Length: 322
Picture 1 (cartoon, rainbow, N blue to C red):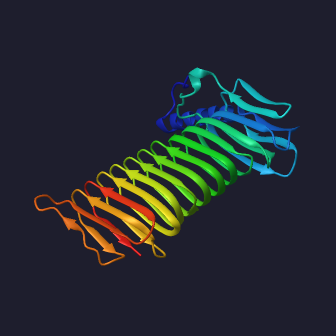
Picture 2: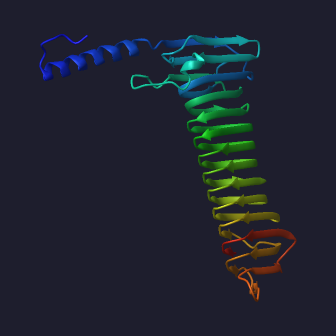
Picture 3: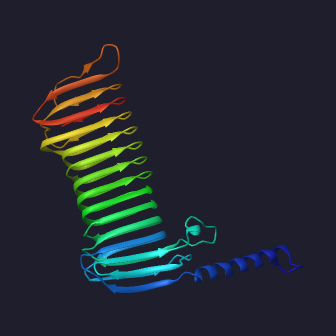
C-alpha cells in the first residue's frame, strides 16, 4: 500500500524501491548448483531443461559435473548416474513452462561437463544450446532457441522448430533440420541430410553424400567435395561451388529459383538441364540450349563423361561453369 500524503516524486521513488526489493527476492530465489559424479567414459547422458541457457562440453575425465543456476520455478532438480547412463533434468510446473512476466529471469543457466566419449541426448524447449567436444554421438532437439555444436562425430542429429542450427568440425552420419531458422555447416564430412522449411542452408568445406532441402530459403555450398548430391527448393536459389568426384551424381531441383553450378575442375558427366521459364548458360562446352518455339522453356543435353548431372527449375535460370 502506498503511504498517503506523498508527492508525485516521492511516489515514484517509493515504487522504484518496491520494484528493487521485489527483483532482489526473485533473484535470491534462483538456486545455485555445483555437483559432480563418477560416470562411464563412453556412457549415455540425457539432459532436459525447459528454458534458459545450456552448455555441454566434453573433457578427459570419467566424471560428470553440473554447475550454474537453476530456473527460479524449479520444483525438482534431477542428477543421477545409473551404471552407464546419466540423467540431468530441471523440472518446473507445467503451468509455468510458457508463463513469464516482466520479473521472470532467463531460466536455468547450466554448464555440464561430460566424458568426451559420451553419447549425448538433449531435450529443451526455450533454450540456447552450445555443445562441444562430445564424440560419442549427438541427439539434440529444441523448440525455441539456437543450437550450436562443434567437434562432434558418429551419429549427429540436431533439430530446432524456431531457431537456427549450426554445426562445425564434425564427421559421421549427420542430420540437421530447422523449421524456421537457418542451417549452417562448416568443416563437416560424411553422409549428411540438411533440411529447412523457412531458412537458408549454408555449407562450407563439406564432403560426402548430401541431401539438401529448403522450402522458402536458399541453398549455398562452397568448397564442397561432391560425389552424390540431392538438392531442392521451392522458392529459393541453389548455388554449388564444388570439386567434382570421378563418379559425380548431382540432382538439383527448384520451383521458383535459379541454379548455379561452379566446378573447380572438369565435370565428367552426362548433363540434363531444363528450365520452364528462364535461360540456360553453358560455360563448359560449346553446346547450346534448345529453345521451345511457343513457350519460354529451354533444355540442354550433352556429355563429357560417365557421371550424371540433372538440373531443373520451373521458373529461373541455370548456369554451369567449369
